[in-house]
Image 1 (cartoon, rainbow, N blue to C red):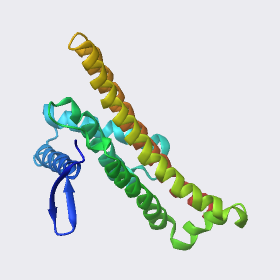
Image 2 (image 1 turned 180 degrees about the vertical axis):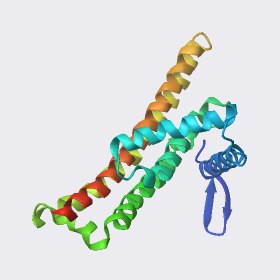
Image 3 (image 1 turned 30 degrees about the vertical axis):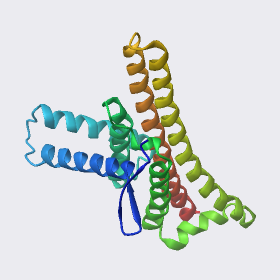
Length: 221
């Protein structure tokens, strides 16, 4: 099992999911450093590939938040890249995707939760940001607060449930059909993993853009 005890540092238990997550972050950081340490005007294959990925993500962000795209690009791009690698990791024999662990998806959802408020306060100021919880009526304050927590919970459970069911379905099909249909299963796994990464990143982007842009509109009223 992926969630079994691995080792402990004092009272803190370090599971296989945590180790895998650290490994993914390390790999992404190293690749980012290697691909950007010698930038050139005429890019090679590696630099062109990295630039293409960044431009694609940048266009997706600007389509949702055209005025603040550059500000939230680092966070959203990191989330997308991490999820793509994490969701596809189970294609490697002996490894499991950390996103099939509810603790990992919960941590990602909590990170999005705090990032939404941080970007909102940073952009509009503390008072202007909090004002939207009373808009259009103070009566809606409890509902706004509840929605903040429910959408965070939904982010965590959606990704966890889909990735867990995806791996379980692939295992069951392989048990029944053996290796007669490995290519269709592999393609299904890749497509679903990319879709889940896209959905989580897009929802995070929408939440960030909503927090920033709605406060911008309220401050102008």
